[in-house]
Length: 237
Image (tube, rainbow, N blue to C red):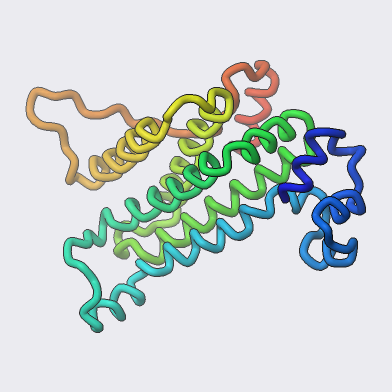
């Protein structure tokens, strides 16, 4: 992946061949195609592994896994079955954010490529949906029966991904900023909305109830109006 991103950055995505990527990585063309289907795949190779890590991490807190750990006496107390799953989804999204920040040069180079190559933006959207699906499925399987309805799980999963992507793009445009606190506060706000919705986070007397917000889509702040309209239409579709 590093070899591919470096070549794309220096000589352009379209002008770079699979053979050049294989040579730069010191592997054969056949080895490349055993692992990747296309140049697009190699740009997001780290996300294949990262998504697997996310799924494994979430699986460790599913009801059946927790029951097994409790039987073995290895599980700590204090798990809230109604809030815990939301915390775990936020923890998983935080891991994805930290991955991007931790490999700064690759993340910045990939972001620059995404601005130039429409096919890579399409692939990024597919990757985003895969995280959403993983979070949604986890919430549906893990929340108590009266909380795990499909609509609520989809809404929270999509909100976490949208907030993550929005703050990540802010960091990609200004990588000198430390936006981890902003991410934590945004996730906390989403969880407060969940608590308020289930009646456990009602505001104290004399305070105003938090505004409820619906995230439809996230676009860059300098996007043209036509692009914004198209993104909203596609999301609602």
